[in-house]
Image 1 (cartoon, rainbow, N blue to C red):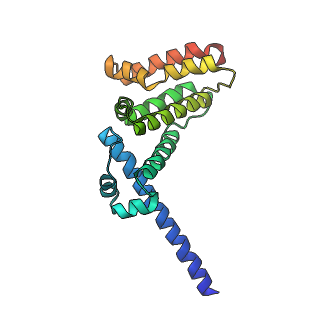
Image 2 (cartoon, rainbow, N blue to C red):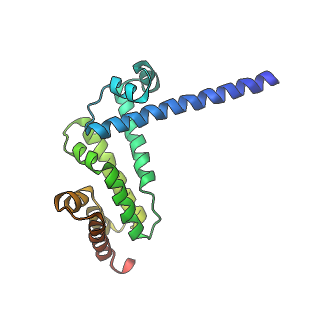
Length: 190
């Protein structure tokens, strides 16, 4: 009986260590892509950033494409967690969004400027995630496509870029501009 308990503990510990290694590799991949502003990374760069061997990366993900696909999903999970906001609170949603854009915005803009299959796959998932976030936090339904479209534009990365990077507005002023847009779009729904 004791041997069975010990074996179960060892298997549980091994599974936890395997999952931690996998998460470390995915975090490193996301960090490398964000820092380089490119999806043209090597397995060696990721392995070095994760503190593991290339063979370990391959054992977990099979090949570079397997790693990249898993990293996109991992990044989307991170973004969703960062953008968590309760429905019906547009003011907090805009603040959360600006926090996110402050962290990821410049790297996302560089990725949007790339014309590779990997970059297009990553940015397509990002657009889907943003639209789903808009529907959730602003409580728009499937019959509200026009309102959802307008809210997507008002809260888009390019809107942040225009206000903060191009016009040089202070964050508080830029957030206020986006809140005004959101309020105007939502009208009496608020």
